[in-house]
Image 1 (cartoon, helix red, strand yellow):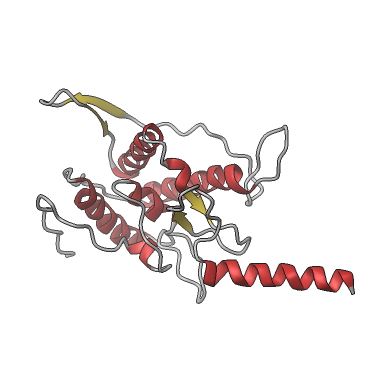
Image 2 (cartoon, one colour):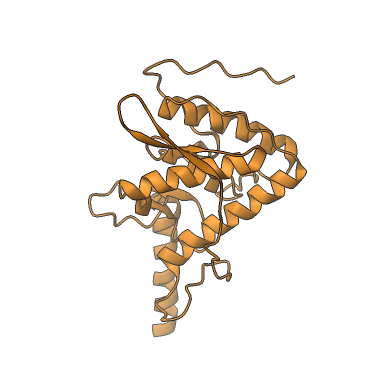
Length: 219
């Protein structure tokens, strides 16, 4: 039986997010770290990291750790998320939809028609999930996720995206420009101009390949 995580204490600092830490990058602040970590469950990097949503056992472990990290980062109670085979399939689909939305926003060529992500799919933009609005004793309104299993996790991710939109920071969640990489990173540059999850791992090699291609065309 997998041991449960201890409840986060007030002022606790979240450790490394399981999926994002594999790619050697810093997590997004607060609850947005969960959004980034879900995106980074993909198989990427060199050497290639495994897809953390490839099987139910691995996905269950990622969910357990990710929900606890979210709770630690936000100071809110960790919800009980239990995955089954159908929920895992739904979570993989949601991850791809979210990646496609970000890819289309960042990397699709200018086109007056519908934007298309690097996967070649047209983002549907139709994902829905339940949630409730709660008024606390201080008069602040909170968006609380609702549902069970994968639906609860999707609701949690969408709630974080919504709150990130209100704070105008969701646009800083990006996928690497390297066409061989889709690692998600949080752009902390002053003018939000970052395009690589790692300049050393992706920026320099990609620019070098482009330079060599141009040189061969000139020759």
